[in-house]
Length: 395
Image (cartoon, rainbow, N blue to C red; front, side, top):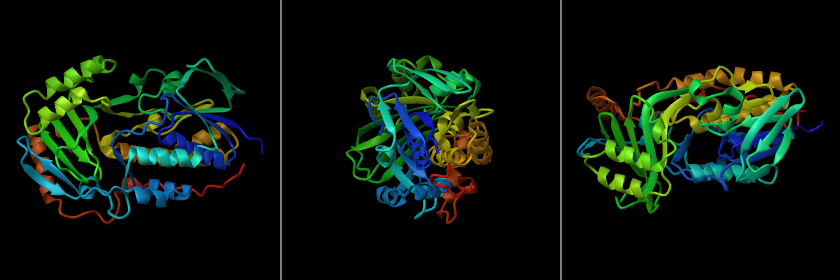
């Protein structure tokens, strides 16, 4: 076969996973990533259901099981810091103990990168600036000034995908804001926490402290309901810090200490809780995968699993169908229902763990007190897709 060239924008999870499958099928793969090195920060992530089959087929499931962090408990607190309920996290998220994986985001990204780093051309510190496509290929200009022509371009560049913007237009057309904004950061673990999380709530606001293994740091998280997305703060870190501080002013528990740590954090990540809904995931020779195509929001806990499953399905389609338009259509046809079921796990204003009203918070607390068992089978949404067999070097 004559190999075809594919440019993948984004080296987080969907990008390297797709690069692996395309290399298995003999494609020439370039991965461009705007950050100067792998982005390995962030909260632990979950791999469940269909995604477990995807990583098993990649040969990395044993490695990921070794990296499983096995959080012991999640304790919910009221506005004064009193305990509402202390539970196995799987009882809350619908996970299956002994099967589903919880992994530090950076560990998964490193594992995926190590799997394909020698087979694909990774270019860090650069990004796609312009795309021009015709019947023969896609001409790409990079921010660095470099130029290249590729048979296909895949956007794996996240919720605020530049690739999507260049091909499909303004994000606002596809962005479904779910009514909450959040800030994540790390801070010293001065709380005596070990493999556990604390979740504090008051109507319309929530906070969490999450300790992974015996780290000297904890992940801090502040979330709040807001009718309109705070667009004015997106490009101004100081405006973000001021907005968060004003929102949580006067709250008790450990909130003052968390706000102070947020003020000093050098890894503050601020964004809105939202989903991406597109009428299609490809146009011509360009397609999207992962959050760029169909972000479900972290409230579902399924962003990583959808990215891994989607990378497999797209890779399979391109490996087995010679015409790229037909391959993209097959990819979307196979994956669309799975994505829709997972996105439907949460709707606008329905952040179950951080309710916006006193009545909803009381209902949540009552439900938490009734959770006494851990699921033995996965939520049907998590496993609603069966992966086809991947024919290596099929083309």
